[in-house]
Amino acid sequence: MTAQIIDGKAFAAEVRAKVAEHVSALKADHGITPGLAVVLVGEDPASQVYVRSKGKQTVEAGMESFEHKLDVSTSEEDLLALVDKLNNDPAVNGILVQLPLPDHIDEEKVINAIDPAKDVDGFHISNVGLLATGQKAMVPCTPLGCLMLLRDHFGSLSGKEAVVVGRSNIVGKPMAQLLLRDSCTVTIAHSRTKDIEEVVKRADIVIAAVGRPEMVTGDWLKKGAVVIDVGINRLPPAEEGAKGKLVGDVDFASASQVAGAITPVPGGVGPMTIACLLANTLTATCRANGLPEPEGLTA
Ligand code: NDP
Image 1: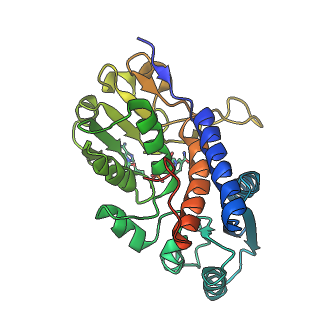
Image 2: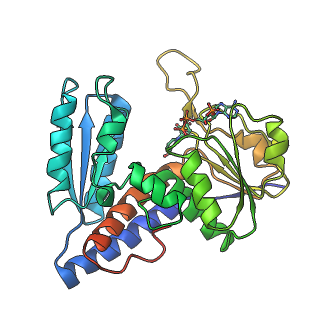
């Protein structure tokens, strides 16, 4: 059996197009332009690429993009002052502080200083609590992207057996909460899970968010399982100076022989993350203005 490929790149383009359509209507009908502020501290090359990409896609969706690039030596106090300013700026509907932050800055303190209503990354402790208690929250972008792909594939997720491999605060835990909210039976596996292959084997839905290249192999899977690979791992380059191959946490070659459907890496979950950031910014704008939320773009 060869799995259906879930094309995250194409789906993300559809999400961005929907966001752009809503933004255009917001402008025409209400004179509102959603604004997303992205704050980058330091010069981490990967973060710079992400921030550039976020800015570009924000503008393409018709929103305002506010980029704040701060020196690596910026103090925690100055960063908190900027967050406070953005919290109080009516043109800013979403705030994202790019992680990781330099060691001298307390990440949790900064994240929890963001107005929860503008916390488009969904990392603020209030949003974590709202999601866990089934209330209206801002939902972390990567798990939201996975959920959208799954809903598109299955329609209803009710009653499905789901196994999330990984229990991080940014992917594994919120992913499990979202699946639970959609009435899956959810198991979270992690580095201390016994007989992890057997646990994964009972799943109709497998979410791999581990950060270990190609760890989940075809022989871990139930025939026909739907596999969402969150991992982004760069293998060591074959020769010096070359770029290593990008792979997921799932061994695509063996898994695609057993799975019913699978996301590739790259081109699966990755593109959904920024698309969901734009969707969250739109949602935050609608909520702030007492307008109905865009259908199909929230959890
Ligand atoms: P973390 O390192 O924060 O968490 C990894 C999780 O995997 C931990 O819960 C850990 O368990 C578990 N784990 C590690 N080794 C094993 C093992 N051998 N068996 C079972 N479980 C294990 O990673 P993130 O959640 O931040 O990211 C996971 C992956 O997703 C990474 O590859 C990352 O690059 C990618 N990612 C992709 C995004 C995208 O946009 N597509 C966005 C965010 C992340 P324990 O808690 O017991 O240590």
